[in-house]
Length: 305
Image (cartoon, rainbow, N blue to C red; front, side, top):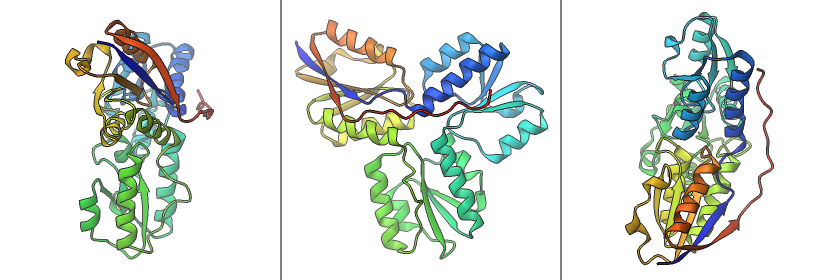
């Protein structure tokens, strides 16, 4: 069997992920180990394991971190309660929250201060959504689906709308349209909350999905944006699978396939992409064709370390 390999660009690390990983590495270099990290710094198992080897300790419960330690808050954002606990425990806090997630937190505070109730489109159990809701638990309702949007009963006439940064652009658009029809006066932020990297990667995977029978999305199951890439590829007409690395590929997926597409989530290192490419070349891949959708030049300043 032989097939062509189509590679999406952009793919992999976004500016927020680069910033978060670099923050952990620099903190380890400056302070030595251990450095505690609240939650996975980004949602990728390979990245987490590599940082653990260097001396990072990942914890879910901030209360389990010893007093007077150094802690880094993950890229996904944290509720105000966690900052308060960090202060009480005299933790040296380095905040690696992605600036685009921080933007949504600031929007919450601004809307609440102006008397709004907020509808937040996101995944209720995702750490980013938990952090945002923590800003004003009594004034934020999280909805995930079109059905929830249709059935939503408002707590006030004064409504604002925010979204998780890693959602499907198309699905979110449909939910927003429903809410705008139901509540014509609902207020949206000045700029879209779904991040540029999420949008660029989804647009890129649409392009390769139209050319390929099979699309492989490299990323962790915990990664919201990686899951959305798989869904976008499927809706664009391709069979799509979310895989951690090349070992997850099943040979039967490649039977009678003439074109295979590859992309990766915003927290996936390029080394895992290259391993998948090499595996596919060994399995009959003839050439690698990169399909470019956008060039990303955005960089975020590192937090104080």
